[in-house]
Image (cartoon, rainbow, N blue to C red; front, side, top):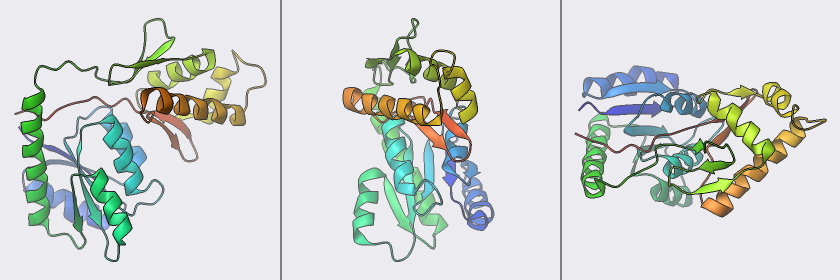
Length: 237
């Protein structure tokens, strides 16, 4: 099986001229991304096995991306760190990813690291074989409960239900602030962006407190919000 690798690196020359082509030459099925929002949208459709992730990204940092994906997916992560990264940050990296490598990158070492992570994931998948899983975040048929990939669920109110229905229907694509406000205005008077942010904040807090999970509801700068529905997939032969 050809391993699918995502490369999240905002240095276009490093991403497109070095990492993507050289990993492809090593036998991986590789796609490159300049931002976390691009990666999240693509992950809705493509079950990437491995991620090469830059620590110092513009916008959402590599640490934030690793922390989030560690909660909602089983993707293997290799973090690329720059020279001069402090010890505290490196300890945080080590807790969140499968491996980290310093820049400048030695491609042979990166390839060997990715293959090692894939082998370990395959062994782990065999140990877990036969265990049932719920594939994604979803609303119940009634629409009044939100189910997490773990199988646990939380109750949602009318505004949360309307918000989640709209975001989940978008299939991982961003939904604009104005669209969400217009949709929620049908069930609440004088709805505005401030109230939208309050609804989202409370929903995230509810998921964190009751499920112990980070809700995959992400802000897209200058656009609105997106709900990432990530399938819990294991590496298979």
